[in-house]
Length: 150
Image (cartoon, rainbow, N blue to C red; front, side, top):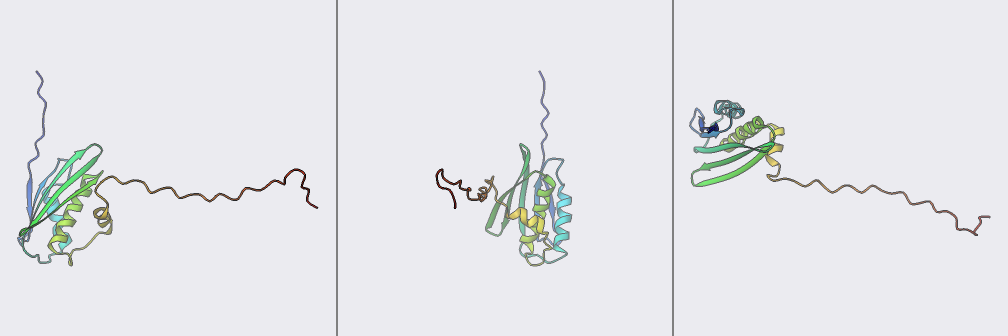
């Protein structure tokens, strides 16, 4: 009888020094650690003050050849869910840090345009745009038999 080894990934937590945010991060060993996400959030905020406490739960899973981030953010009675997909788990870690920083301080966060593009991308698979038609030059007309040009 063979036993299969199953890796159990327990969530790790990170929090802002000022208590404005708390993150529960669950990801595979090859993904960034909670401490790395915390350091990145702190860098993005640049020490800016936060508002009421934000609680974020993030879980990253491998699905085929991509990673999927499930994120749940709560502040007071409000909550928001997001699902992001990318081929690189480190990029999803960076996106998590940016989302947390933006939720804590949308005005003072130092935004990386490359990551903002990732956040604007549709969550599901996208269809390729329809091909642009190639103009076809008008066919040259052969003179009809019996109509000689004079």
